[in-house]
Length: 274
Image (spheres, one colour):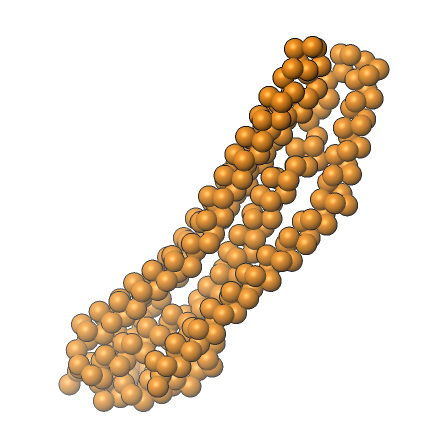
């Protein structure tokens, strides 16, 4: 019965996480598109027109690199969407991780001072964990604790309890790592989209090569600008996403290790077989 309820809780959590990912992607696409349509591209067009007017007056005028010009193309827009989406996903996982870590400060068993856990008492302690709300019972600490208590009541062996807790934590390692697959894909996709912009920009520059021979290099410069700017933005965002990915992985690993150490110190060491 407990296993079924835990599985149901985990399933509900995964459904809510999936809905968050879909909803956040839709919101981010709308916001970024609106920002590009109302701010970035109008500003980039105004800066380009101003630079063109200045170059017409002064042939030696060198336009300064402008932020809006750098990010104005479609490849950069898609990269920003994916980067913000991955940040939203990692933020959601970080919030869920923090909620589970709060349980480390809770006395789930309410074990009196100096009292030992006996095999015949493990069922009573397990009922206290079963009484937790569904959203908390699906966290790592209650699941590992229940696994250890059930194993202790069944085998009356403390070493088996440690093995059961360790196995549960190892499974949690794998689950958390697998759930970051979408973020890893985004971290790979961002520089790939930047490379698409690079190829597109070089292609447009080559199409204007005949004008460069005649002395008009503006088309070639514009194409190369697309190529370099898309690469610059994509690589910069990829570095940011990878940094945050490693940070959330580090937090997840620490949370699992802290949970296993907590259970070893406060539960396994309090067990005794008469």
